[in-house]
Length: 85
Image 1 (cartoon, helix red, strand yellow):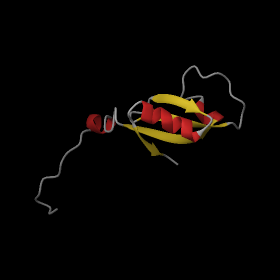
Image 2 (image 1 turned 90 degrees about the vertical axis):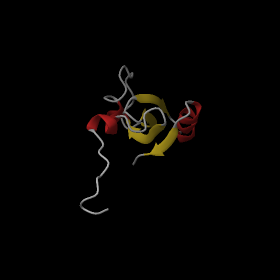
Image 3 (image 1 turned 45 degrees about the vertical axis):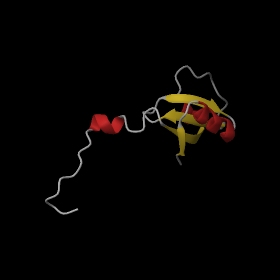
């Protein structure tokens, strides 16, 4: 692309909705990280590791103690899972 060619512009609002309804993010998280991400989550024993699935917009979808169950939740909702580290 040269300097004179127009670049496609993506607004912050468009970027925020990118992947919405099609992509889900899978991440293993500790109990201390989960408290702020999943509203109404009951107290979890410190040090517990769970798999969290989030929508592309960051909306929490589900928690599981097994990665395969979290992946299945993504597929059941017609979402393409992407792992976050």
